[in-house]
Length: 125
Image (cartoon, rainbow, N blue to C red; front, side):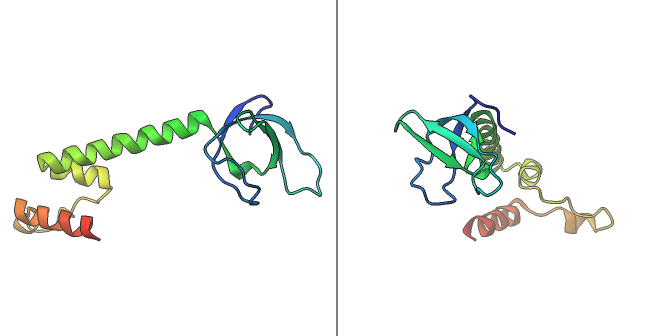
């Protein structure tokens, strides 16, 4: 739930109102009319306009920054795992389940060439 005066970023344009996506805005009001599809009124200082929008069109700046930091750190870990050929880290970052323990040791341990081949196949897809 957003609060009045809160700084938000426009992330979508559901009703095709020519919203400036990616711009900062401030919440200046809430539309409580049950007949209206819009939930919030925002002011975009850069274009000096007010827009009535739905909640899914905006997001908090802190939330977007946290998501971007998580994505960048995951990409960096993935690049490090591929550069160092660290299979365990690669599997952890990609969320791949470890092979079952009841399997044969030889079948569970694959050669580095086989691992690189599998990584290249997934990267190609």
